[in-house]
Each structure stands twice: as C-alpha cells, then as structure tokens.
Length: 298
Image (cartoon, rainbow, N blue to C red; front, side, top):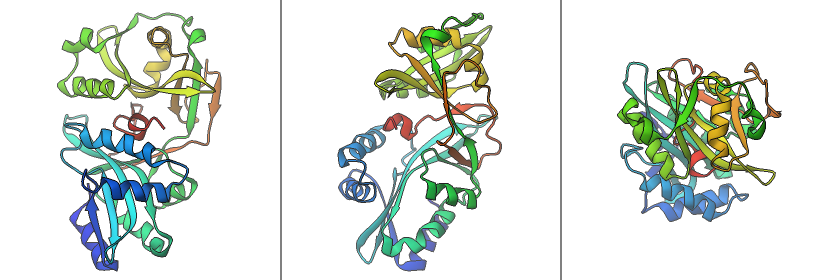
C-alpha cells in the first residue's frame, strides 16, 4: 500500500514513523479518528475497521492504513481500504481507498507533501470517495480526476413500470456458473457485509450487481455499488426495480457525472464528488466495492 520510498521520505523529513493499523494498534487508531473527526463517534469507526481487519482475501495482508508518530507521540492517521481489481487483461491491480486523513495542527505542514508521496505509485489506483472541501483542492493538485459529480435518485415504485427489456436480475447462486471466480468472491463477501447482491442477465450476458442499504428521509433505499455500467442500470431499470422492491427498498441512488442522463430520476444533487487517480481512463463501469460505502454505509 505504502511504497518504501514514501516511508523513508517521511522518516527522513521529520523523524516521522508509520505503523500499520491492525488489531494491536486499533485502540490508538480509534482514538485518533475520534479526535480528528469529532462529528463521528469512536463506535462508528470501530464497526468499519473491525469489518476490514477481519475480512479475508481483500487486502492481501496489506494494512488498513497507518498511524503517524513523531517523537514517540501519535500525531496523525491515514485510514485506507486496500483491495484488488482485475484489469481488462485479467491482471489484478492494487486499489487503495483514502477514507480518512488527519494530522495534528502542529504537524499539518507536512500533510500534503506526505500524501503526494503516498499516491505517487503509478501501479496503484487511488480513490477518494468522500472528500471534504480541503481534500478536493489537494486531490486536484495531486492529479486526481473527478470520477462523479453527484447523484441521481430513482423512485422504484415508479421506475418499475418502465418499458421492460429481456432482462432479469438473478441471485448469484442461480448465475454462479456464468461468473468468474473473482466475481463470485466479490458478491459473496459483499453479501456477508450486508449488501444486496445479484446478477443482471441481458440476452446472453451476465454481470454482477451490488447495492448497499441506505436511508433517505427515513425511507429505505439502495446505493449502487457495482455495475457493468451506468447505462446498463438505466436501460434495465424496470428489472432492477422489481429486484430491489422485493427486498423492501424504495429508491435507488446512482452516482453520476453531469453528462449522464437524468431521465426518469426524481432528484439530483451535484455537490458530492468522488475522485480517482491512476489506472488509465475510468470508463463507464461503476465500482465502489470494498469502500466506505460498504464498510460504514456512508
């Protein structure tokens, strides 16, 4: 996750040490997160971190982040979620979600330069899906590209009556033989984390779907986490609506760019951006797997 050059640079720059977040360092990590993000409780952070630390085959033994120490004092934390995704040629590429980044004010002068070193690994894709305004400015300076601008909301009891195509959403047990081992593992793990998973069948094509549960104004709904493309979702929204309604979900949130079609949506919002760095063009695929949207439901 962190390159040796980044670690050595930090140590040389300001006598800084980085230690991985694991079960042994979890109490210190939780204390830093509670200090850096007072709007969240320590219990909130503990739930997600425990899920990450106990999940098998997600991080390939890479840590869920690092605690930053200077002169034997914990002065900051970089919380990450490591995972792997297959490229078009099937090669697995490292992916790192930057979830929380906090450095005490007395050492904040080094924060942006440290992050620059950390995200310099061209072989890794870095995602920042929940940046605050200050992080957005840093992201743009560090070469992150805007992945989405905001989101659309679809009301499922309405979109279920869209014209039907020859599409159906199957359980992954029904479609298991049509999926790769990687896709099956992804669906099983996200189902175990409380997500709703399925497989969209269109003609002779089978593609995984993952939705996280969420609420909006007290109503239960779904957030799109994984799909072959946004177009595949909007083109087959009737079948997807039936699938989600059977699971007592009333709306669907889909993160989009301003250029994506808003036809049929009931609401939109353009001030929740997501960012990506590395890995070439982002394309149409939606992939927020192994992200804070899954582990924390944010």
